[in-house]
Image (tube, rainbow, N blue to C red; front, side, top):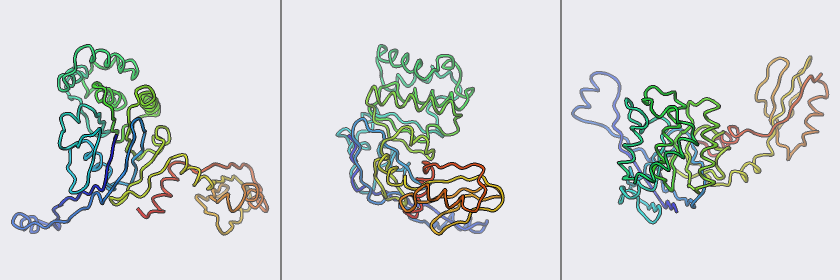
Length: 324
């Protein structure tokens, strides 16, 4: 369904030193840096997959999404989506994709949301029967019936994001690109959006490509992650398999009185203040019971808990491993 092969993309960015004299100089003679946003990346995504596309800021995520949407043309390489090159047939390609940018709006700011929906209907030339069917389903599933007559500027962020998702799905796209769809949302709104996306994928087999820094989104929605850094694909892995590979890392949290526990070589102290310490260790090298016994040897333990590595810690570990 989606085939990205050996894609590269560079940008020429103007630079100058600070100061008025340098600003005058730049009017006549500009200096440029070449930024390599993407460097020979390749991956395939099958129909109905939910893929997390992750990486630090500036890694190349948004550039990749823009190429797959047809907004940008790569310098080299090939991108085929539904047997179509996105930037060569943008009009027909746009009919098959939906895009949600968490920090940009596709709703007209000063008009009621329903007016924006009707304008989108005209843009995609949807027949009235299909439009009404999709609209009724989206209004019910996203619980936006009470707010679609309100101007977008008057909505809370959570309300607006639910309307943004509805707007991107009015034309029943096969592929949904989500760029930070839950940024700034409260816990209830995040859960509602995640549940809706899971249901959409389950019932309609919509392919979802998710870019986010919220690892709870990745954990809740995706089955596969692609890690990009410095414009290169560093990892393409099944999320569960990656968890199992890294799940040997355990976190031990201890509340104690008196003497602090002695720290063995191979343990990592995450936090330590008087009466409280958090330690990470590899359970393949030492069992949990052995570590607890060592910690309790000369320390009066008041409370103790053991947890696996969190999604955030897992991704932070990957960033460290690949030096990005």
